[in-house]
Image (cartoon, rainbow, N blue to C red; front, side, top):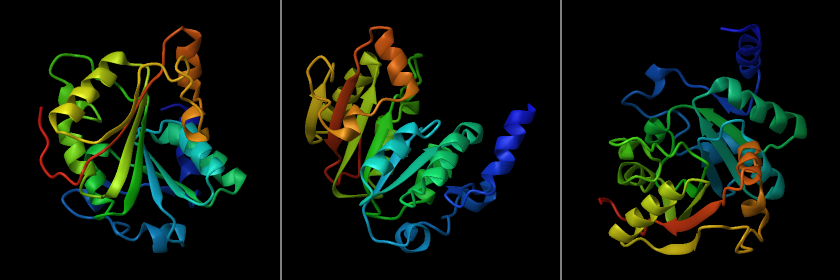
Amino acid sequence: MGKDKLRKFAENLTFENLIQPEFDDIFHRDHLLKGHWAESFFKNTAPITLELGCGKGEYTVGLGSAAPERNFIGIDIKGARMWRGAKTATEMGLRNVGFLRTRIEFIESFFGPGEVSEIWITFPDPQLKKGRENKRLTSPLFLARYVRFLSPGGVIHLKTDSRELHDYTRRVISANDLPLVVASTDIYGESLATTTALALKTTYERRFLDEGKPITYLRFGLADRRDFGM
């Protein structure tokens, strides 16, 4: 492991806004913060938004900076990447921004019923290889996890350069009769990026735009379903 990565891991331990549980703390058990993020972590009752697969935390920090009246948690497993987001949020004094280092497969161990009001999924790995559909963060398998902690009326945002993932997610939405609020295959070409949240651009997004790739977007709910399929 390189010295820079070791330095980042060491600094991660000093950040109050970064939670890094041990595997044994969450495997087949609930984390101590489950159901208690408001009072124990953020010290307020503002709505909580998650960003899944947050990478360097650019979107999480951007959302938190633009909406101080809400709380935001970026989730990823790559500690060296999350270091950037945790450090930036600390330097900016964003007390409404936190980070959680874990696999998204374990997300139910961290959030209780109705604890999350909104989920952003920004430029995830589209898992294009055959047989990898269940790894997609908008697959029925993952939606069944999210519904257990998404509040009634809560929404999911998918922002991606992958048209295949966009179309796949639309099929999941249709097959499960989920409420589709917004669907766009080119948010900039269709002039839909009118809100600060949707107009935020990560390094990856800027790269995709430079390559001429359209950015797609979906906003949908889960309608309090408990079973999902295709």
